[in-house]
Amino acid sequence: MLCGIWKRDVVMCQELVCRMRHRRDWSGKEADRMRDEKAAADRILQQEIAQGNVPGDVRQRSNGVSALILHKGKELYYNAFGDADAERGIPMKRDTIIRLYSMTKPITAAAVMLLAEQGKVDLWEPVSRYLPCFRGQKVWDNVKGEIPAERENTIYDLLNMTSGITYPDGATEPGRRMKAVVDDFVARRERGERVDTQEYMRGIASVPLCFQPGDRWMYGYSADVLGGIVEAASGMTFGEFLQKEFFAPLDMPDTGFFVPEGKRNRLAQYYDMTEEGILVPHKGSHLGEYCGEDAAFESGGAGLVSTLDDYSHFALMMVGKGAYEGRRILGRKTVEFMTQNRLTETQRRTLNWDSMKGYGYGCLMRVLMDQGEAASNASLGEYGWDGWTGNYVTMDPGEEFVLLYFIQRCGAGGISGTLRRLRMAAYGMLE
Image (tube, rainbow, N blue to C red; front, side, top):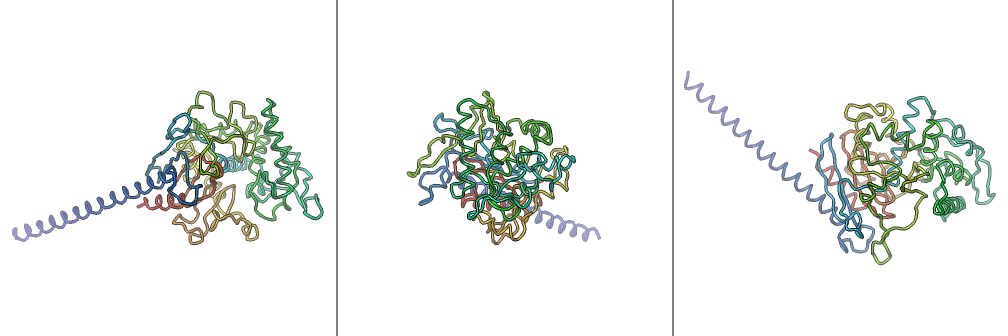
C-alpha cells in the first residue's frame, strides 16, 4: 500500500516538474519573442533617421522620432532616436514637446461631446446658433458662382467633416479665398496685431462652401469652427475649457495652445525636406496656428502642443471608455458614439486618401472597418488620427491598446510604410 502511494507521488512530482519546465521553456520563448519585436520597433524607428535607407522615398527620413506603446495601462515599449532640434543639439526625449497639428482634432471632438453630455449643445443645432457669422452661407458652383446653401451646417456636419468648409487650397475657388483670408491673418499677427479665435471664425465664414452641407466628406477647417462653438457655448476660451475639463484631470501639464518660455527648450524644431533630401528648419505658419506666448487663435484643428506621456493619458481615457485612473471624464456611451463610422455610403466614397483605405470616419477620427482593405492587423474599431508633421495615434478599445508615434517633419501626415510596419510590430507584442 505504502509502496503504491510512494510511486503515485513520484509520478505526480515528475509531471509537475515537466509542466514547470514546459512553462519555463514557453516563458523564455515569449520573452525572446517580445525582445525580437522590441528590436524590430527600434529598427523601424532608426530607419526614420538613417540617411539613404529608403531609396527613392525621401519622405521616410526624419530628424528625430519617438514611440510609446501601451497595453491595458502597461508600457510595452518606449524609445527615441535622433534630435528634437539638430541645430541646438537637443536629442529627442520622452518629455519633448511637439506640435500636434491635426492630432488636436480628437481632443476637440471630445470637448464638443462633453458639452453635448452637459446639455449645452445639440449636435443637430445649426452652427449659426453659436456663431451667427455662419448664417446664410453660400456654396461655390463652378458654373453659377456663389449660390445659396440648401440648409445650414450643423455641429454634426462639422464633427464628420461633411460641412464643405475647406482648408487653404489652390485647386478650388473657395480654397484660394481661404488662403487669402489666412495669409492676411498671419501677416497681421506678424505686424503685432492680435487676431483671436472669433475673428478667425468670421474669416472662415466669409468663404463659400465647396459643396452643399452633408453632400460628401472633405478635410477642412471644421474642427476649428468647433473650437469656436466650444468658446461660445462654455463662456470660456477654448484653451481654458480644455484645461479645466481635460488637461488638469488627465495630468497633461505640457499640453496647450502655447509653450511658456520656461519650457521652450523642450519644444522640438519642425523640419521641411528639400528636393535634395536635406532637412531644414520650417519657416512660417502652416494653417495660421501659433504656439508662442500669445496664442490668440486657439486652433481646434491644429493648434495644440503635447508630449508622449501627456497625449497617452488622453488616449488611455478614450480606450478606458471615458475614465482615467478612476476619474470619469466622458460617459461610456459618449465614447462609444465618438468611435464609430458616421459617414453614409455616399459620403464615404469621397474618403479617398490612400491612408484611409479600409476606414470610415466620425467625430474627427478614422475608424477601422475592413482589415483586409487596410492591410492591417489592427482590430476592427481601432481609431485615431495623425498630424501634418507625421505624428500619429492608434487607440484600440477592445485591446485597451495605444500606439503613439512622434516626428516633426512637415507634410509627413497620413500612415506611411514605416508606420504600417511599426503598427504591425506593435500588435505583434500582444500575447
